[in-house]
Length: 300
Image (cartoon, rainbow, N blue to C red; front, side, top):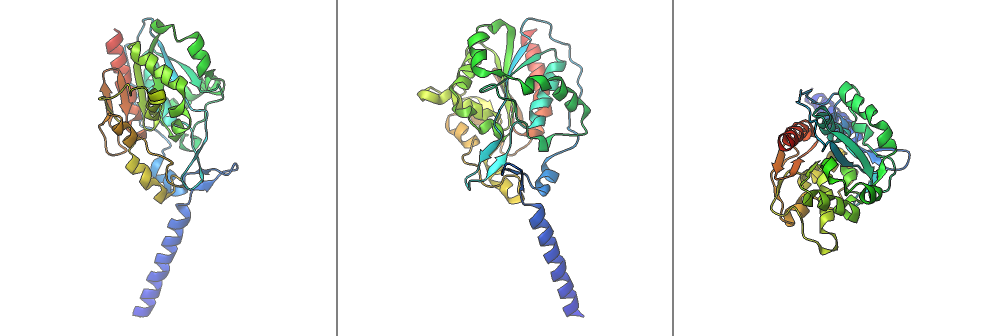
């Protein structure tokens, strides 16, 4: 009897292990890249976000525009050579946009070369009507964004029309943007023009662009929230990433003099002077509310 029980338990454990193994394998796409595993999608994505439809007293001044720097890149190479199918995280992009739009602001969408915006569509909250509505409202701009260099050449002198620069998160923000001198020019422009800069999760990777050509880090001494490197090191275990990140972010920012206010991928949001940041997708709604209220208070 005991032998039968042990054999049955061993069979159950083997089956459970097999299920865990196959559900935690990253899923390969047609182009050879990998999206998160079924297990990771179950744990880390939602069908409906935590967006709160807040009523704001809308801004009616001249500084209504927010420049939003999105990624046009899809595949991020891991240390093992595998490509992570990424882009901008839809919740991290669209929830802050919803709040800021409801507060009376509007967006100009740019990518590095004018190629279409890439989203992590596997993370899109398919049953969230508010998120779908703003996505569809800006879909034509996402598909035909302005080229970053063209914005610099034609619009950057029009400081009086702008309130902020927004860099949404998603691992795609780590592809090329931290090394782009034009991104550095935009962030320096916002910093020197007393505009707000808003970002979350991996979006603060853009801040590294301000140090190119041996320039000083413009956010040294600032408090900020960012996705922790320690969490990125853990996610390959459940198949969220198909390997380890090629480089970290939070420790780089810390090494440059940033004061990191979170140690987890939580809903931490921080405002320090004209910099507004959030820790992870879980911070998207709170970041949107904080950004909307902060801009309204500063511009009234």
